[in-house]
Image 1: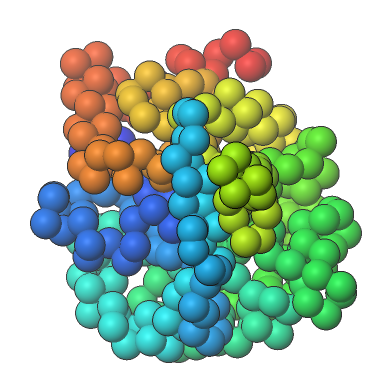
Image 2 (image 1 turned 135 degrees about the vertical axis):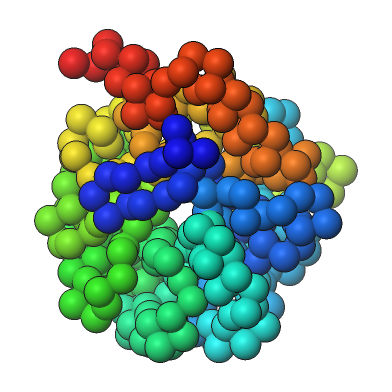
Length: 308
C-alpha cells in the first residue's frame, strides 16, 4: 500500500480513497461488508452541537443520474457521537485509517463548541467544515455566500484549534477560486469539493415539490463533470491539498479527478448503490499502480501533465 500514500501539506493518508460525509454513517455500519480500516479514511455524518431530528420525510428521492436528499443534518449531537463511537474511531486511527469529523453550525459559536468537545475527545484525525450551513445570526445566509463571510468563519475556527482544517466548498457559485483563496488566507489546511448541487423535484400527482423544504441536495454520477470543473478551478487557485468528490463510480472516474488536481478522492452516493464500492475501487487502484510499477504520485504527475 506504500504505492498509494498521500503526503501533501497536512494531509497524510495511507491511501487516497475516502468516504464522503452523509453516505457512510459512522463507518461501523459497513463493517459487515468489509474491513473499513483498509480505507484511507472515512468522513462521518454531519455533526452539530446538539441533537437534530432532521427534516420531515420524504428525505431522499431517486432522480435520473443521481439522488436528491433533504436529510436536515439528522444526528445525535457531538457528545453522543463521541460516546457511542470513540472506541471504534480510535481503532480506525490506530490502523492508519483517518477519521474525519464533518462539522456543522448555525453560528460561529456552535462551530467553536463542537470543536472544543472534539479536541478534548482526541479521536478525530481531521475536521471538515461544512461552510454551506446558514448563519442564523445573519439572517440565514450561508457562511459561504461571499468570500468575506467564509474568511470570517474559517479565521474564527482556525484560532480555536490546532487540528487540520478541511473546508468543504459548495458548487453553487460562479467560481470557487475566490472561496478557495479566502479559505487559504484564513488558515485552512485542505480543501474538499464539491458539496451537493441544489435541485428541485415536483410530484406531479400532488402538484407540489416532493420535499418540505422545496429544494434538496443533488448528488450522483451526473454531477461528475461539474465536480471536475470546480476542482480544476480550485487547483489553479491554490497549492493546498484537495479532496475531490462528486459522482465517482469507477476507477476511470478516480483517474479523472487526479487529472484535474485532486490529491485524494471521496466516494459518496455510490455507497448507497454498492456498499463495497470504496473497498473495490481502492483494490482496483492498488492493482493499477502495481501493474504499472508506479506510485500514486507518479500517476498524478502523468495525468496532470496537461495542466502545466
